[in-house]
Image (cartoon, rainbow, N blue to C red; front, top):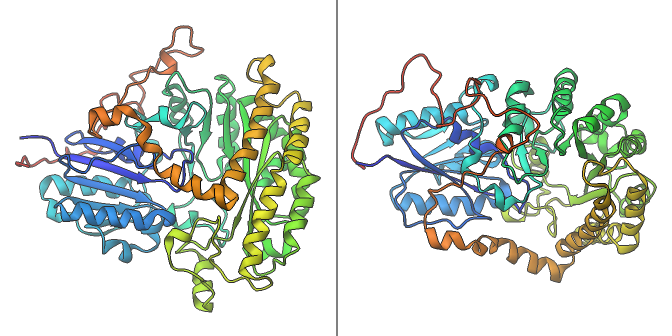
Length: 507
C-alpha cells in the first residue's frame, strides 16, 4: 500500500517570474496524496517514476508541448488533467488530450477531482466548471514545493488579488477569473513573512494590484512596516495620482509595469482599452518623480498602425521618463474577442500555437503594412531603444533621481543601476537579433539540465525547506503565528463541514 502520487507540472512561456497557480492547487490538495510541483524550464521531469495523477498547466505558446506530455502520460495509464488559459478558452480541444479539463480558477474543481480520484479514478472525466473559491478561505500557497532558489533572489511571487476590472479586447483575464477580488490583507502579509531568507525582493503577480483603492491603500500601509522591495503591475491611470504613488513607494515599490499598448488614441479606442494616450507622458513622469522605475509594454500590428508607428513610439520614449519597455506584435490569444474577429475575417496567418510568442512571429495580417514591415519594425525599435547610447542616457537619468533604488546600501546604488541598464541591452539584443535569438531559444530549453542535484536524486518528489525570513534572528517582525487561519504547516486543512471520504485502494 502506498499513497497516490500527484504531479503538478507547468510549462512556462519563458524563464519569467514564477506563478502561484500550481502552488495554490497544491495547498488545497487533500493530505492523502504525495505531491510535487515541476517547472519544466527549471527542473528535469522524471517520467519513469510511479505517478497516479498529473495536472498540467500551460499557456498558448506551450500548449502543444503540454498536449504531447499529456498524451505520453495517458499512454502510461496515468490520469491527466489540463488547465490554464488555453484549456479554458478551448476546453473541447484540450479534452482530446486529457481525462479532464479545468476551466477558469481551479481550486474548487481540483478539490472535486481529488475526491473523485480517491473514490474511483475513472470518475475523473470531462470538463469542470466550478464556482471560484472564496479567497478568504484559501490556505497559503505551497511555496515549499517550488524550487524558489532557481528563480533568483529578486522574483519571489506574491499575490493580493485576482482578475482585472477592465475588458481590453486582446486580454483573456476576464474569461479566466470571476470578477476582480482581493485576498485579506493578513493573508498577503503572511505570504511576505513566509518568504525564504535569501529573498531580496518580491513581485506581485496580480493583473492590476491597486485596482481597489481602499484595499491597496491598506496593503501599502502594512507593507511599509516590513520594508521589502517589490514590483507590481498597474494600469497607467494609477500613476496619475501622486499620493497613491507616494504610498506605493513608501511601501517598498521599486518597479511598476503598465500596459500602454500604443501611442495612438485611435488604436486604444478600437481595442476597448480605456486609456488616454495624452496622459502617458504625465504618468511616466509621476512614476519617475516618486522614485519608482516605470516599465511600458507596447504592442504593434493593430488595424490603425502604419510603418510610422515605430518611429513615433521611439520619439515618445526618448522624451518620456520610462526607464524600461517591452515590444511585441499583437497576439490574439484564443478565446479573446479580437481572436474571434480575426478568425471571422480570415486574417489569422497561423494556427500553430508555438508561434504565439510575439517575438519573431506575426500572427495577424496587418491592414496598413506588410508582415515583414511589422516584424522588422519591432526589431528596429527594440534594438534602437536598447542601443548603448540610449541605455546610457536612461542610466544617467536614473542615477540623478536619488529616490530610485534607495532601499539598499547607498554605495551600491549607482553600480546597481548601471548594471541593470546594461543588462537590459544585453538581454534584448540576445532575444531580438536573429542569430542571438536562435541561441537564446535553445539555451532556455536546456536550462533545467544545469542542476546537478536533479541528476543525483532522480525524482521530482522532493522539496527543500528554506529558512524563512520571519525566523531569522533579529527579523523586523515576529515569527509566524500557528493560530493564523491561513497557515497550514502540514499542508491543506479541510474546511468543509463533511470530512473527506477516502476509499483505501491498492495502487
